[in-house]
Length: 318
Image (cartoon, rainbow, N blue to C red):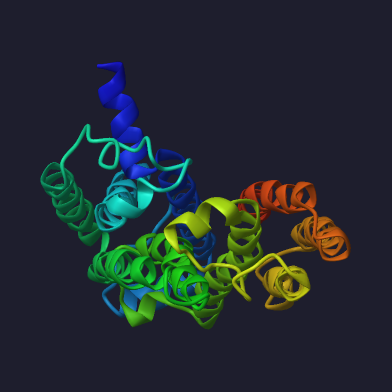
């Protein structure tokens, strides 16, 4: 039984799936807090009543939050499952993946496909219960990750750009899910900016994150023919682009404060985290050492949850 749970965890890439769901759940809570703040605005409530809109959020809907977590986890797990089905023979070649259930022979691709399809349908159905747009975005995310990003990994470093799109959709999905049935009258101009900025922060973050991982695992990736570093090798240009991506992340992370829905505390947190991230990337540029690449990689693991939690706390404190 222990082996079954271990295999299932490897099949769905549990830690990756958990990280994705975390981002979506934080954005959902931010979206709910935005609406709760409006419920205290008499003029806004009056306007909603005049439009016949009675679905005014006055407290966090924890039931929908749980639906988002369950649906988001299943959709992400399905995409990871399809990824492993496609890469089964390649996974056999790499030390970090050869013990996954399919390349190790403990699960057939047919069994994996049944599990993946079941999770995809159930997850999409759950997210679709929140609103149609959330369900459609989940389908788009599965398709782009499993059937576009996955085969591109062996063809071109542009795979990182393609993979960053589904990787950045969870915060957008979470924010849209917070509004229930999406209607134009429920949205204010700031909502569009919040949704876009949440997407952008996670989108830009993925470049130094992916490239640091690719630097650390380059020897293993080469066995499967994966080309994820910008120049396909550990050189100065790849390190420079990693460093530049951390610099770009700094102004992007300050957009919440610039557009007025984030305070100075979250700006300070984002700036400090961004400077640390950039400093470690600069050290990698100067040394091009594996140990420095690991530091950038581990920093990326902490950066995104820290910034997202800081933004949520900013809304809670209002």
